[in-house]
Amino acid sequence: MESRKISLIKGITWRAIGTLDTIFLSWLFTGDVTKALKIGGIELFTKIILFNFMKEPG
Image (cartoon, rainbow, N blue to C red):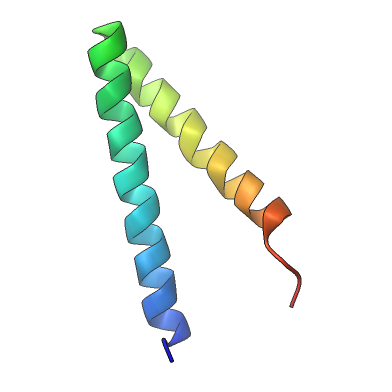
């Protein structure tokens, strides 16, 4: 069974990869790095919030 530390590291790594992907795609679509970073930042926080609402208690 995976330790909590390993699970946390995997979760953070996966979230970072997802956010970088969003920033890259946003940059491709908008052509504006500043807008892409803003979109990526918003995406990061909304996914964290949504995850905390969706995870099961306990």
